[in-house]
Length: 438
Image 1 (spheres, one colour):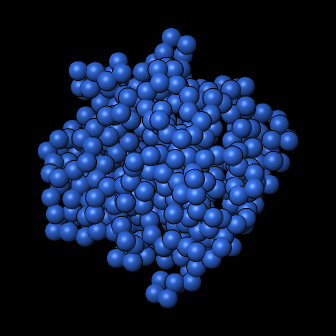
Image 2: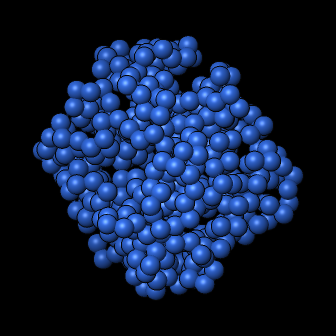
């Protein structure tokens, strides 16, 4: 069985470099054969069943059970392979091919979050927005534009390769910056609208597709969260943090590689404006936890105190590189979102962690467990989370989107490559093997 030309089965035929990586982990985890088997299966499945190299040198990556490429998911899916890209030209070429495809998609429409492999008209063509046959979905999310910049930068830092910083990249980055500047003034400057008919409220925007009212803050507006759910308030704090981080990457690339002073100055100015908005509007004094970051705000006095399992999240702030895990405000925020004060933190007889309004109540996400581990400063907490992920695969050898805190056999999305690769990255980090981030 195939979806869009992609094999659904994992063939175990993987790059020799990946086999060497698995062997390194096996040597470190001689008493944990199931974990090693899960790592090998997840790496193999993503490599064989989601990644497609094209004759033009580009790479198309499906999410798993949906035959479309999300800009966010595809970058996260290949991220663990960065650890091998300096040793394996095939892997490095695959990642560069994905970067090229992502920035070509951004030039097609920077507001779209997911794309078809060809202009086949698949996906949500009935949505009331400016759809095209090449677009699967046009939910505007800041993070969808952050991830390709991040992946380009990490490819450089992990391999020394700079050929990805070509005309497609530069044109795409300038489109991103122009859009983020426009969306700083969403009420007056933006013509983006999105409506989906006969759907849950989380799948569409209010006010005839414009979203809830916002005021200027210096931050840039987002219609949707990385869960693809509509924002309650238009300034999504963790996504704006991610934008600050990748704009700093753009400054470095413009200065060190491109020699583009104008691009460097523009990116720096925008990153500072967004960051000032985060510091002014994105922090509140909580009566129990002290100064904390909020999840969303509108610049009009309303805030949303919560966190969602999808990345970028408040939990993922150090993983994104916005601040360290020892930052006092992050530590306060972490305590809040890993407590019942966060309406999407669930505790059960088997597991506890962060879920999402995107999935049923009492379902927590393997992605959030991986992020909790990768942002923890406690080796004990990391070890406990590795064990929890090992024990909640429901006997499949794979991670899932969400699973019930009392019964891991109840889960959503049996094939979700993003979750599989987040598990791989966390396990590799636990074994002392990490992506170089600078």
